[in-house]
Image 1 (tube, rainbow, N blue to C red):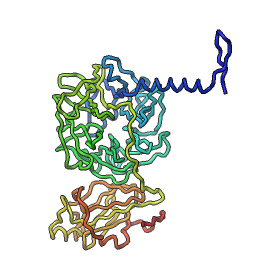
Image 2 (cartoon, one colour; image 1 turned 120 degrees about the vertical axis):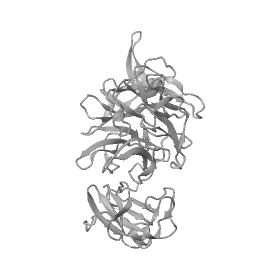
Image 3 (cartoon, rainbow, N blue to C red; image 1 turned 90 degrees about the vertical axis):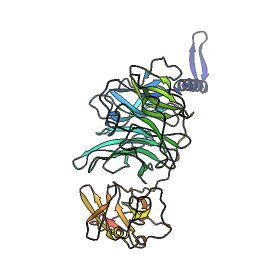
Length: 481
């Protein structure tokens, strides 16, 4: 097939469709090359309100910010404003093919923060999530879904932020975290798990932690914590060798922090401090070429700029792009990058419960059993919800317990003595996804401790149903091999 095209010299003549298609593809390819390798950054007006990094509120809800595209090869060229029609926009994340970004934005000052997608080729955007809550911190998941944080308020717990996921078109919305915490600053590491900052909100405010979980919300657990009373300032980012970099302020410094790292395989025992070079850090990104791009401000400068940080830590940060008009944060690179590992999911929404087993409640700390007096004192464990007790389970002679608990609800586990009085042992908030199965070695045990090679007495019986007022649950039957 062909199309007639007018030529002023020869009149109408035929041109094959494939030629027009080829020309179109070449034009698109040339356009895409224009933004490949460019930096996408959040530009904040200098002199904004003071930042509250501990809660994450200020940098997630920046009052006047724009997404900018800057060219590291042309440091004097003005940045291209990608979100000129938005009142504020921040937190960009680049798709795996390097062609699109997702970000948090609000078109008008009184709008809720929502999740948007933009094609870098032509800066056309569309809303992915439009809800009556603030939605922030989007990140692409390996299976193609989008994960983000959404605010929620209740009279019982106050303001919380839970993690959700959805399909790229906004359908399939699913809640992933269920504890009364503030969850934000998510990133995905090479093994497919999500690493995010969390902070307890109820019953009292807690310190920040980095948590890790699977993209379906299962196997959520503490990953590592800041030193002393430190505060994390932004997302953790992983390098190719498994080193996970993050920015932390050791004294809750509102201006910025220092660069630290842990290794993916032993995050609790590999903490390392990197040279600060007389300046403050705000965020970082690891490029595919191994370059570490940082939002950095030397003490003598007025604004944060984008710098290249020597991965050996031996050279001072090299300026890449600096402007007095913006503080540049949330650095990402518009480039193709490999997907992280896709983890299988055991979540089955036809099942209403999850199962949890503890091998020995008397194992604490680094794996040492409590003394005999303490061991005799723990006779039961109680499962606590928000302002309610779900019930109790007896401890077997070997210290084990085994329960089936309603899925997707927050709970804590508290140890009770022979008189029914609580001991000093109480867990942080937990939740179980539908059909999830979890086991622990003891109470507050060393996370690197492996269980003894024995069958706990508790699993030789049917699990205790929690909440105990529920007599029967209509759910899908799962046969285990």
